[in-house]
Amino acid sequence: MSGSKSSAPETADQPVSLTVHSAPQPDKRTAMTRRGRWQALAVIVICAMPVLASYYSFYVLRLSGSAYSQLIMPTKDIPEALQLSALDGAKVTAESLKGQWLLVAVQPSACDQACDAQLFMQRQLREMLGKERDKLDKLWLIPDGEPLRPELQQVISQGVPLRALRVPKAQLEAWLQPQKGHQLREHLYLVDPMGRWMMRTPVDPDPGKIKRDLDRLMKANAGWDKPGR
Image 1 (cartoon, rainbow, N blue to C red):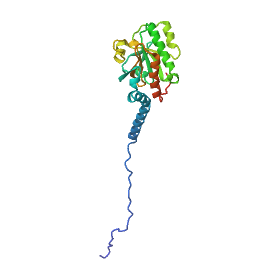
Image 2: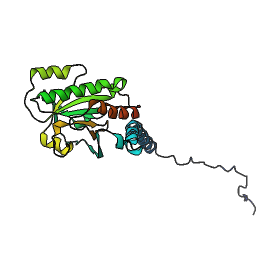
Image 3: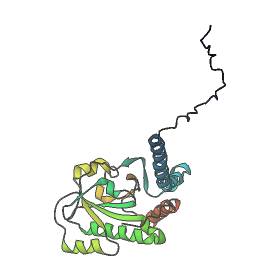
């Protein structure tokens, strides 16, 4: 038509653009949480290995048949609700007893001659371990609230201090147990670094034979080198 212009549609090629979206990334917080869990598990395994090694020596290698002391099977965990207190009355948590081998005496505050002899043997057994002695702490559990004689305070502070804690008798008897027909005070009790009672010495024990039992455990547990508290 005259006076009109027909316009053709645009046919010029236009470049095609593509938008590339990045692949979805895992939540960084989730990854960090997983990594933290694995790290925590690794720490627990590393800390437990020395203790497990000592149990391996006794139970898997069947050293229990040659042990002089009585092994406790199954072991008995220290009760978390155990009401412990220092001699000055300060509260002590059961958790604070973990992390070290414990050689435990159970004696009343009115410590008699037999008590004195046991505390002396407890002290000597630790010293007899030589270079392994820093793996073992001495603990005196007192199932009453009576004051100690002044001379006992001196015994506690001799050499490496003896840790003395008071605990209700009923709670103590629910955890540690004597040989049938005997009393708690007639034995020494060994508690492992994870807070498990695992061995009891005989009544009227031979210190040399107890030392051999302790030597086996400490050597099997050679990786546990945390110094005494």
